[in-house]
Image (cartoon, rainbow, N blue to C red):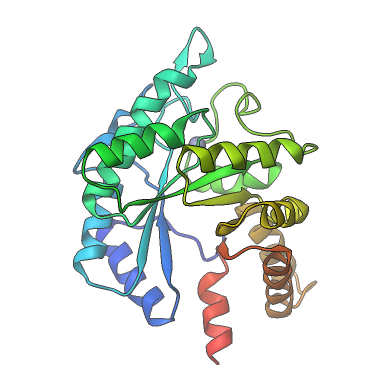
Length: 275
Ligand SMILES: [Zn+2]
């Protein structure tokens, strides 16, 4: 995608310096390991790519909240968000790996861990693991309502994490269902989530609104890669005014009730608003 790059640990610190200088408040890291395997083992290493990046950003003493994506799909050779047993995603076997991964991110200095896998019970598994290791202050941003969406396409390409077989329908949500989203949010909050995320954002503004109205917690919205790519492509063709379109979209997401917006447009918006 235009404007989107994979970064080394050194590069990401410089990127974060720029981001902090623009007045943005937080970053979220997604890891791309050198080696992938069936269980995503490289996601747990204390010297893994995300762990090293978090430590380096923290050491640079920037005024930035550092969040990390907690999932397996970037680290598994099959590209699924959980481990596979008998040809199916094994929910419970995945929980311990996710909890260990979150712990290693928190130990490296992450302020917020953000599980995006959609396994049942992962918030509770992560919360328990963090608390038992003296990391009660590390917050959890849970992707509570993550829909099975075509809008993730460009990210999977960039993160080389497209599933090698099947799809993610068994653990991601049905786009037609809003009540299930509210149920998932309630469950995640019971399990100890500090804030929740709705993903994608644009086609799910009603889900953001419903979550906002029902729960008194910070609501995040993920303006995903496909949403970004549509605007970028149309702008490149001269079919849309990029700045006006982006500001209108983000205003709409905020109006729907999002307190936090994850967006690939962040740096552009910060520059526009500063100018
Ligand atoms: Zn995943």
